[in-house]
Amino acid sequence: MCRGRSAPATLILLAANLAGCATAGYFGQAISGHLRLLHERQNIETVMRDPALPAALRSRLEAVAPILAFAADRLGLPARGNYRTFVQLKAPYVTWNVFATPALSFSACQWCYPVVGCFPYRGYFSEAAAQAEAGRLRAAGRDVFVGGIAAYSTLGWSDDPVLSSMLRGEKPELAALLFHELAHVKYWVRGDAELSEAFAEAVARIGTEMAAAEWPDGDLGSYRLRMQQEDEFFALVLTHKRQLQALYESALPEAEKRILKQRQFESLRADYRELKSRSGDPGRFDAWLASDLNNARLVAVSAYRELVPGLLDIFRRGGNDLEEFYKQAEILRRCAPEARRAWVLSGGILPPCVPVRGNR
Image (cartoon, rainbow, N blue to C red; front, side, top):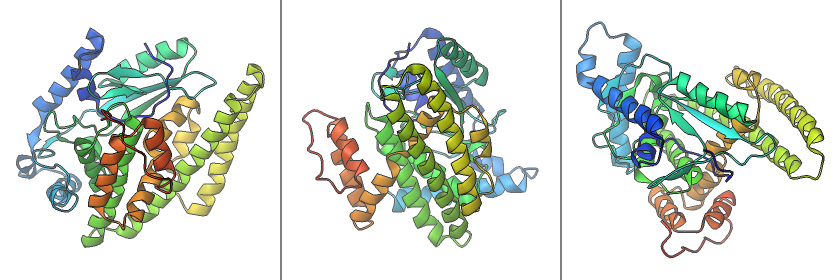
């Protein structure tokens, strides 16, 4: 059952399911999937003693320890115990998330759990199970998107392993991914997955900039270029999402809205082609745009990206002081959701939100 409240997302699959508020079948696949990973994990030092280990995999695994040390010593992230083991997956992703919305709204379907709150997606360890759920939602007239996920956090409930799906990028990308997941352990706001996800992404960006600047092999220039291209692309997507939101809220007949919706997606594709020609992007987002564009796909973007620029502005306004940034995040935790969102979107320009008693 999905509910029509809008609230973008995070990726804390196990913790949500351990709360015990899912169907028996869904609960079972989540627990068995995670336990399977725990059973298959191997100590990274043991893995690296294998003389047949491919050189590229060895290089990435060797990078994990210094990244974790940097996370703990310089970023204040809870790295102890996490990412000391490795699992070679038999699939390109560890989980698949299902997003769904009405055809003419961005009010994402919500799946709610105690402890961690509501999510605008449902995660599966099986792609087939995720696609089956997507099929049921499409049959009900929903816009649906299924996205593969490279990593997830248990919020400190267990020691998370490094997964083969996490090792496809270069060292800065690996650092960003590990910093992101460790930031979830440090900071999670119940009922506000959008802020929680944006906080983790902001910390990942801040931390990777700091770390790559100190590593001889950090390749900071290439990393910054990739991040700039990503930022420009996601800003473009969110601009079109806002235009679609205005369309859906208009008084136009439903049939006309559906026609204009498809025209908006074609406009997004055209704007992307122009952006790609200017930015030098080699086409990393071609497949994303070539696939079925719908509301759910855009919700999946806003879930992770919409609040990130504002949080980075707040970090810069605080003198690039990470401890001060963490203090501001703790204040946000206690504020009303509408006030904290407005403050973040302003980049800290608005007066700070006032904590609400009992809000965590």
